[in-house]
Image 1 (spheres, helix red, strand yellow):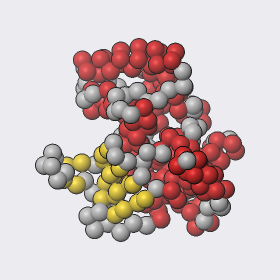
Image 2: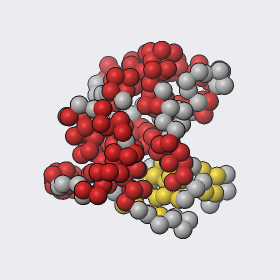
Image 3: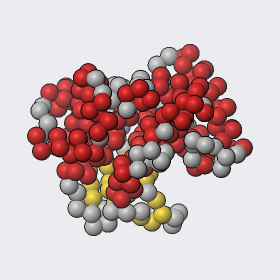
Image 4: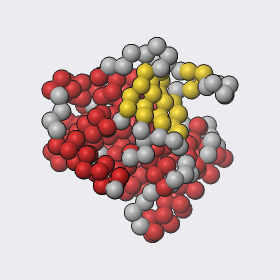
Length: 242
């Protein structure tokens, strides 16, 4: 019953016309969308619009939220998921934005982003902006954390999101395991993946996702099998259409 109601509500949200005031913000921060064909651009905008309207946004650390911040966050989530189902972010309820890196209350250092199993993503706004303004450095905090949310689609942060078929898991595991072990063996020698990806399998998937969207040609050249698995999962080819 709840799933039906959510789907019904989402269909209504998807049909609502976005506020005209949002269009310049989308064009400003996501110029790649102008290079997409009409159908894919429409899917991107639908994902962005639904995320913008459906998720709860909260400011923390004195940050006052603006529509621009919400558009940037929603657009980052939509960039990953534009060719995936609209339900991939169902378990995400709240996005909290801090103005800058924050100290974890548990005393575990400072953070730029966190994704939690209880429907929460926390982001540092200055890190999110840095990711947008440096689109080819392979480091985008928002993309990284939303990759974690997609990874959690099967119930675990394990570096393997929910795939379409059993055969897909076999190829994914083979390719990702090999590249993860290579990065672990030489974390500072990779020419395309950040060393942070050697932390564990979940971080490897998130770091590989950042490279896929920010350094696609380099990733395709240096790790073609890894690129292909990500292309098949995200159902898009950034070398060609971003």
